[in-house]
Each structure stands twice: as C-alpha cells, then as structure tokens.
Length: 308
Length: 151
Image (cartoon, rainbow over the protein chains, first blue to last red):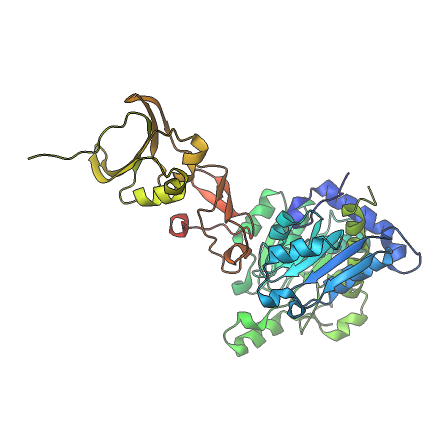
C-alpha cells in the first residue's frame, strides 16, 4: 500500500484494508510513542501545524508524534498571530505554508476547509477537524483504541452515547464501525438523535443498529463511547440539566456492566462521566488520548513515504 | 396587422423549451455574452408552443458543445439543443445533468468554506439524476431545494 503524498481529509477516503494497515503501522510505533525507543525516521522533515481554532489533544499529539519521529514542527495555535488577521485567504495561507514544510496538519472552523487546502497544496494535508465536518485522525485513534483494548474491532457491541446529532466524531465513527459490520446502539435524548442519513448508511453497509433514549441495557455493551451534550443545544438551562443528568455515567450506572466493558470519550469532558469512574478498569479514555500519538505517527510516516 | 417573429437562423445553436422567464438565467449560466462578444443572440420569452409557454435562445454562427450546454440542465431540465446548418436542424438532443456542477449553485451551509472569499467556485457532485441529488464537494451538505440556490 502506498500512502505517500496522500491527503487525510475524511475517514471515507479510506477502505477497510487501508484503515487496518494504518492501525498496524500505529501498533509498531507504540514503543517510540511511549518514549521507550528513539527514532529518526522523519529526521529532516518539517510539519506545519496550522490551528485556526483552539485544540489541546489534536495539536499536542500531532506535534509530539512528529518530534518523537525526529521531525520538526512549525506553525501557530491561534490565527490571531497570522496574516489571516489582515484578511488573507486560507488558500494563500496554505500556499505560503507549504513552501516551508513537507506536510500540513490543520484545524479550521469552516466545513470543507481541509478539502480546499488539499486543492491548493502539493504537500499532503491532514485534517485535524474542519468545523462540524470531519476529524479522521480522531476516528482512526478510536478504532485503534477499540482494537487494542478488545483484541479486534469486529464482534463488539458498541454504544454511542450523548449528542449524536451534531457530534462530528460520532458520525465518522459510526461509519467506520459499520465498515467492520459492528453492532451499534445509539443512545441519546430524542432531540439529539443520530441523523437519519447516518443510520440509513450504516444499515446499508450491513451494521445492526438499535436506537435508544435511555441508559438501560448497558449490560450487553462491550464499548461505551460517551460524548458531550452541549449546553448551547438547549434553549432552557433547566431542560439541559435534566437531560445531561439522565445520561451521566457514574459508579451506579456501571453496576451491571460486563467486567471488560470499556468506556471511551474523545474529551474534553464536562459532567458526562463522573471523575470516580476514572479509577475503574472500565475507564479507557486517557489511554485513548495517548493513542492519538502512535496513530498520528503512523499517518505522518505513511504520507511522507517513510513507511510503505 | 404585421406580426414580428424571431427569424430562423442560418447557422448556429437554438436552445428550445426553456421554462418561461428563464432565458436570461440560461445566458448567464452559459456566460455566453462574455465568451461570444461578436455573436448575434436572439431571445424569445413567453413563446406559446404546443406544450404551453417557453423561452427560446438562438445563438448565431456558433455550435455549442454538449458539455457547454449541459450546465443549464438545473434550471431547464427539458431544454433541447438544436444545431442548425444552412437553416436545417442537423442535430437535436436534450440537455443532461453533468457529473459535477461548478459555479452555478450556492452551498446552503453558511459555515461552508465555499461561502467565504476564497478563490474557488462552488462545486457539487451529482449523486443521482432522477430525482436530482447533489452534494457539496467541500462540506458534503446535500441541499434540498436546489433551484432556490442557483446563483
């Protein structure tokens, strides 16, 4: 498989085989990501990290990934310090940045911005989130986490919980899990249900989908993927409190779950998982966050052609 | 009483069966007034034909190619293209929706990058022709009321 020069814009640009290949490469990167082994694989390469919107995990883990492989990083974490303030277009910013680097990682508040960047850049573009659009590296690290924690992706019953209507992460993840024909349960308040198109697409791909409005039946779940319910989706703050409270994961909700059930969360979390859950064996979300490093290392090495 | 009719043309292209009132939009989409500054172009609006009212556009001395004309399929799906040589129709065909629609439809998503001042044209991928379904190349939004989004 040859990934050299490829853009990473949406998980839908990759086949199941390609996804598995990326995860295999990420697996091999683990000792380097953990700092146990040193690497100079990307020595001499420069990654531009263009964050037009705030991010903690995506930006830091990309930068860590590049540096762990011996590469260098240039870029910005806030557009306030760039010529965008002077009214420069994204196209011009990209054309400028690409002349200084070998690969561009970007996050931008507008949907489709990464596709636009890919049109103007000759170096690979890796999408670190484009508005409510795609966030393919999050999706890959989620799949990597499920495989690492459960041995394989297939055969698990995965529940996606929270704001399924607006959350970009869950739409991409549902699609990716459907590629593996995973059984999925979509749990959300009725007003934040998974969009019909996503449900239909997953069913057409052969995934078995159940839709629920409550936390009942968690005892059958192997992977519980929790997302944040955003306050701003509710006009009435009281209504928000009520809804958010009924989907909160705490020790009590975990009483009857499977021994090896894992809880994932793309983070940041607010109240949806009680901190006491962090101490249980179910909590996989901080390990999931770490997995961003090996997965992003794999992608960088692949698109730069240093791993074939 | 003397009746003034649009004259037949000797050579060129006649676009017939345009929905009434859309002739100017057709010209705008084709960009023809800029690309053919020396062509004589006649427009007939609200012509009463066998199937009711319609508009007709006649472009002299220029045979339009299919890929040039197919762009109008969104506003004139039943239009026919007649190629005229020496007053005879030598070729007649219907417009077809192209695989991609570039620079004609505006994306309804206010947060789409194509609605900013970037140096790009809007671009939609045609997912299905019957019924017509299109998807924004950039943000992947699938607009419902396409005709209201024609620029």
